[in-house]
Length: 82
Image (cartoon, rainbow, N blue to C red; front, side, top):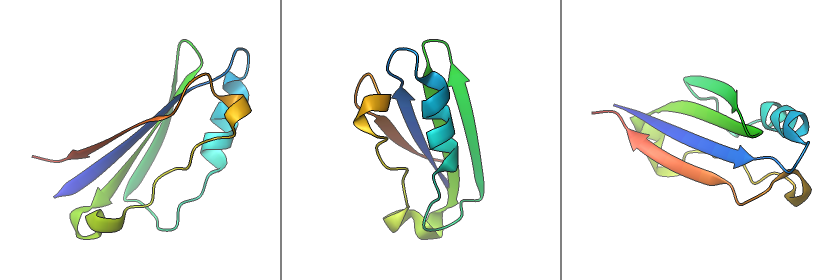
C-alpha cells in the first residue's frame, strides 16, 4: 500500500514565486518514493509525496513556511491507496 501526503499553501499577495521556491528547497528527513510540486492560480503551491505504507507511522511532512509568505494556514491531507 502507498500513502500520499498533500501539502497546500496560498501565498501572500505577490509572493507566489517565493513560496514556490521555498517549498521546492525543503528537504525531508527521509526520501519519498515520489515527490511532485504544483502551482495553481491564486498563488497556491501544492506538494504531493508518496510513501511506502511501512513508513506510514512517522512520515516526514513539509513544515509551515515563514508566516510572511502565506495568506492563510497551510492545509494538509493524508490519503491511503485503496
